[in-house]
Length: 188
Figure 1: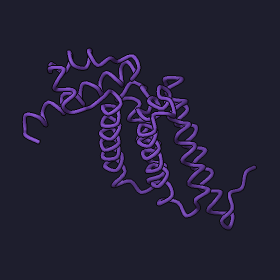
Figure 2 (figure 1 turned 90 degrees about the vertical axis):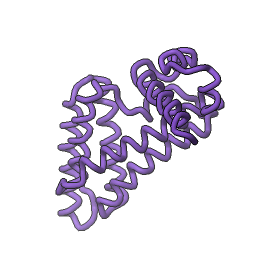
Figure 3 (figure 1 turned 45 degrees about the vertical axis):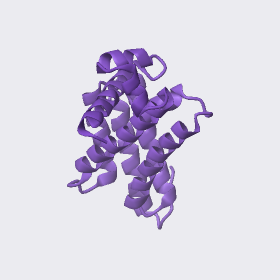
């Protein structure tokens, strides 16, 4: 793909990213993306067969950007699991509590859109894999992952980081309990 075509593709994805984040997928029309990307209709369809194809490319790009930011943020942290919650706090502030692009898309997409669902599932599977790689117990990793996901939803719902702080504290307590109970998480 030539430099010009790559530039056009990038403009389309950048515009779609902004509009999907601000308005949502269903509220963003192809004509608005074309207009705000300052491209011809044929250019959009040269790069993407449909809005669904554009959505898949958008999710792949969001996954790459999110992973890059996430792992860059965590690289020097001693406790990466708890630092993941701090990353979420920072993202909430930077993104004005818009929430997770993947969960937002999940809310707007039917299960019949299998490729979109697969992209969402792949992103979430990667996040779970991160927690599994940091914690010795897969069950504990799933619990912490679930708390992290809940932190995303609750902080968006309440437009505040207080739920993230509370769920981070609970995650820390679970990790501590797991470390002092011979491999079993103790709930009291």
